[in-house]
Amino acid sequence: MAYGSDPGYPGGYPPPPPGGPMGPPPPNNHLVMAIVTTVLCCLPLGVVSIVYATQVNSKWAAGDFQGAVAASESAKKWWLASMITALVLFVLYIILVVVLGAISFSTSASFQ
Image (cartoon, rainbow, N blue to C red; front, side, top):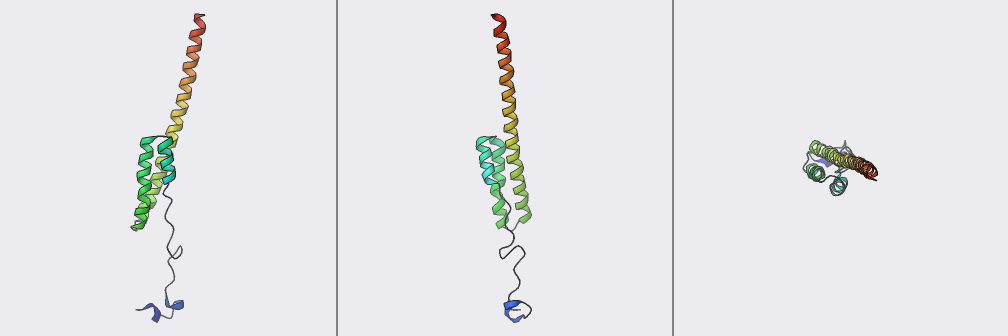
């Protein structure tokens, strides 16, 4: 059946797929945040985030829409884990510096 011969479609062509002529847009790949958290926060977790972020567009282009969404969610989860890990380590470092400073101050004060 040719599209031009079906009078039910305006202009003889079927309606576009949902989400516009190209379909729905691909999910956010979170690549920028994955790179930023790799460089500034926690390297191992950031690398995992980059791996998932780079899979999003290729899975979407291959037609694996659910895989692309899952890779996007995993990339976001890993860059958030990288950021939270860096924040926790920073807070622990500050606490360590304050405690050691207090111990050092009290020790030096007792010798004088």
